[in-house]
Image 1: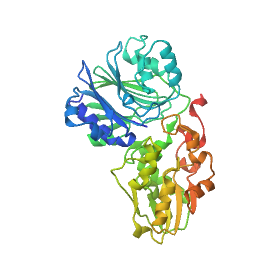
Image 2 (image 1 turned 30 degrees about the vertical axis):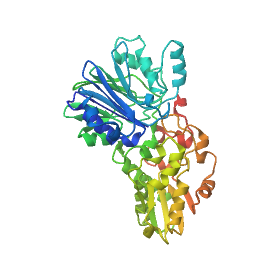
Image 3 (image 1 turned 45 degrees about the vertical axis):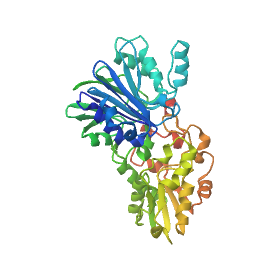
Image 4 (image 1 turned 90 degrees about the vertical axis):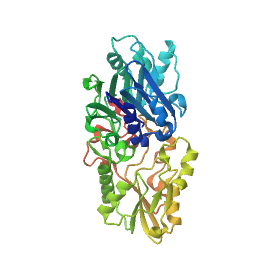
Length: 444
């Protein structure tokens, strides 16, 4: 997933980038970095850890210039190691260049082998470095045309921010897998994965960067180029379901609105007699609100989250995920004791945490636990930026709904249907690889 941010022509570009990354911390917790430009040199700092821990005031002061890009890392291609933290920086014929990437390239291993055979030396295991090497090939008169030629060779999901001299560049793949938004802050253009970053820095949302679009920003000037086309859109529906913050605009509407609607439809499709509706916080809250409002069953925050613990789903080690459940959640026993509970969450991916949550609710005195999931069964691996590298990790790929119900020890279990997920959307405009198995790039 990852979060990216860029700003051009602002006297506090570095500080704004820090805040932009802070707002998008949920998109990646392994490491982060900022690269700034004073017009002549690039200044970079990257490290493992959260934004607030990596960047002290002293480190921010060491990054100079009125143009900057930043990145919060969530690893899919390339391990969770310091050399893979972005933005990546390299020297090339167009001058020092930095790049931040949200997404996953499906052909990067093939491209990397070809580049290595031609003498290229790689410093990381990240697929993003392939893009840098392709840009550096001496085949174009300027950085923009070099980027266009590079993007013609790569496949998969990418939203990019690049920094070259005093120029900020943003690009989005022609399928539109991952979001990228354009904002304006006192005459300075801003790029971000999510609009919540604009809210924090005080920028006004302008529009989405269109699929296949490249924007080149120098000061207050912006030039748009549309050179890449795809046979269809393939926006990641999981952005609406889980990844994006509820207050961010995602493909035209806020995540909160989408998730509440999914909960309402789920209540229509899979009603149940119960006393309270309880969300698995925080990502299950909007859907639980929708379920409660549609069903008339009272909503209760009966699981309290420790907000000093990150999202367990995107931690890289299974051991951390398993331990994180008890650290992260604690039941309010007075609300659960003697109650028939509808437990609402946004998805079941590996099913490593939900059995523990069901047991926690039962141990708190619930007489029944009915699990409702506001997303269809997650059956297929994602090659476009979700950390599900092997299908065998996905419980729905090998077990039926009834088998999953028994595995998690719920009294009943139901998922939102694909038809319900797209009741007011055009399914053909979204990537549903993880629940339908459809591989959108093969539709060319």
